[in-house]
Length: 81
Image (cartoon, rainbow, N blue to C red; front, top):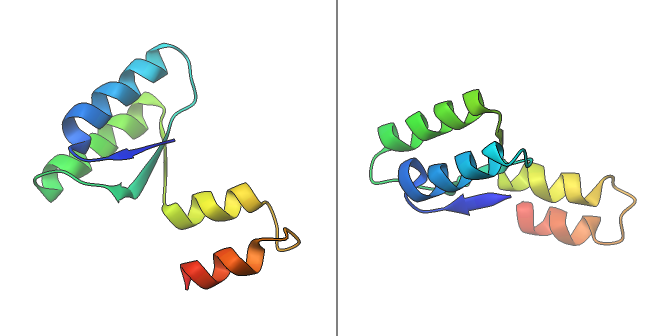
């Protein structure tokens, strides 16, 4: 799970290195930035092509909970809303 600044430089290089090591990489797109939208989007395109999963914070939160039966589901739902 990766997020951070300069998605087109530091984050991308880290993710590509992890993918080379055959690790699963998820990039939390709404928790990443770059100096320009074009650089950020180019990084996401390259990472998706290299095998990284592009996800959002909300997607991650609900995937970790698995279903509405999780004891913290309502707490997370409140934060998300």
